[in-house]
Each structure stands twice: as C-alpha cells, then as structure tokens.
Length: 240
Image 1 (cartoon, one colour):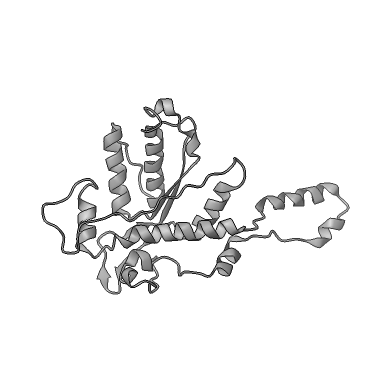
Image 2: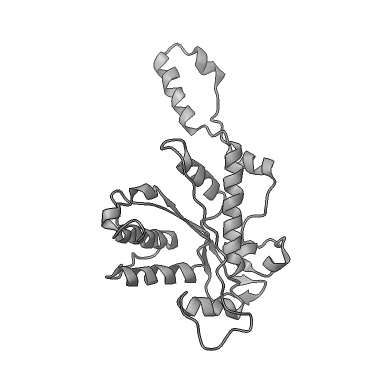
C-alpha cells in the first residue's frame, strides 16, 4: 500500500507515483541495504565432521559484497524510474491524454497542461557471462516495491490504483520478438496477480496490448535480462 513521502524536486511534488517511492538514501545507506554476509559460526571450523564443514561453505553463495558499480546502477535505475514518472502525474490532463490515446496519436484538442512528452531513460548493462549482472539487478530492483496499490492521495481518489514500479523479464532461449512480447505480457499478469491475458494474434496488436497494460498500470521501468538470447533469423533481422 502506498505511503507518500514529500518529493525533493518541486516538479515532482504532488505526483503520487513519485511520492510513493521509498525515500532517497545516502550512498552508505544504500550499500548497507545491498550487502549480505551469511552468519558465521566460528565453532563450525573446529567441527569433527568434515561433511558438516563442507556443507557450511554453501553459504558463501549467498554472500554479497557490493562494489561501487552497485551504487552507480542503483542511482541510474532510481533516476530512470523518477524521470519516467515525472511526465505521468495521474491528476494532469496530459496524463489522461497519454492513457487514452496511442503514443503515436494525439487528440485534436491540446490538454491545458501540454502534450505528453515521454521522459524515460534507457540503460544498458553489459558484462561477461557469470560476473553477477542478474544478481546485481535483482538486488537493486528488490529495494523498490514491485507493485504499489494506491487508494487516495491526501483525500483525492486515483482512477487507476495500481502502480507497477518495475518488471524484470528474462528473455526466453532462442527467442523471437513474439516470444519476448508474450513473456512481457505474462510478467505483467503475474505482477498484477490476475488471470492470464490471451495474447493478440499479430505482433502489432500484441505490442499495442502490452502498451495499454503498461500505461494503465504506470510501469516505472522494464528490465529485460539475457537479451543475447534473441535469435535474429527469427526476428526479421537485427534492426527489427
């Protein structure tokens, strides 16, 4: 459930999507949140059974020692989410237009708060397989609630009450564009806890179906992991 914290920037104040996010933290607080050291029982070192000592070494897999890159990634994701939401205050006519018209279409009458202009950022994280990119992303994302439910914002009702802050999708093996789109659609349904949506028959219709779900649920950031699994000869070429 939404708990509102006053925003720092004047342009973010009065926006429930931003004010429902966790308060901004200093670097040391962030690193403390992201670290995890499994409990160490020093007596186990002296245990007479080597199998017991060996079993305890499995705890090393859960150890997390955050590096400076963790903080950079955290700030990049936090900034991207806020930048996205900065253009989507649910109480403005601009956002109403955004919700009811496709991105590439506009009504004949300009809203008094102006046309919708997307402000989202794109982030690319590249690294060798197995270095911990997915673990890093999951640790950072899990700091933020994945779904926030709004009721009213200081007495004002919200028309759309569900806010999906982040969604992480693993690109399927040997994936086509359609496979990836269906995975995104399924992930949205799982986040909302509702029934599975039947995917539209064509790629174009499926994209619009996903677009509408992303809009009405105010998705903050979409993370696609393992993009290298896309098979270009199944996507109509690399550009597509």
